[in-house]
Structure formats: C-alpha cells, structure tokens
Amino acid sequence: MSGFLGRLFGKKDGGEAAPAAAAEVYKDFQIHPKPTREGGGWRTGGAISKETPDGTKTHVFIRADTHTSQEDAVSFSITKAKQIIDEQGEGIFQSGS
Image (tube, rainbow, N blue to C red; front, top):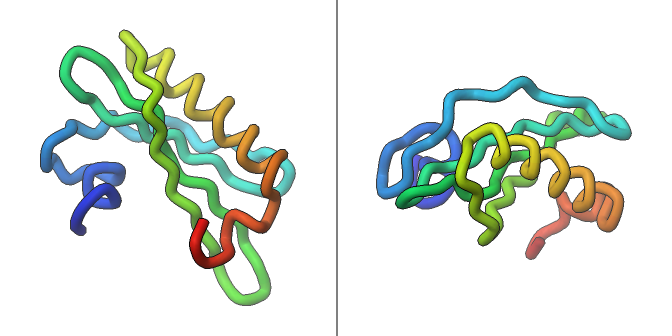
C-alpha cells in the first residue's frame, strides 16, 4: 500500500496506525474508524463502506482534527463518518470526492 491508504490501514510510513477499532453500522453503511498517530496526538480518519449489487464500495477519509487520546480520536472518527453519510449519502462513492 502506498500513501495515505497505507498509513490509514496499517503501514507505518510517517504516522502510526491505531489498532483496529470495532466497525459500526449507520444507515446501512459500515464505519471503520482508523485514526493515525501523528506527533503527540491522533488524527481523525477511517473508512466508510457499503455493500451494493456491484460489490463493496469504500470511501476513505482523513481529517485535520487531532486528539490527545486514541479513544477520543476513534469516537470523533465515528462522529465525522456519520456526518459525511448524512451530508453526502451514497454520493461519497462518486469520483472526485
């Protein structure tokens, strides 16, 4: 894996990935919180996926928000994912988002 996808899903290339947190289902989407360790804090991030007739679609997100604890970063990553789902719905899977 390369770039931010590698960092998000476990490759230690700059930021350190958090151990996998439990996925949460919200409005038929699965939220996979995956904050990364940067400096003295944790950066908000994760993936949102959904099963469709065409297969699983996934949208990876990383935000500038940082937190002092991993637990806070996981919690906020879930909150941010719910906000993205509420605002964009399945539009998150379109090109260019």
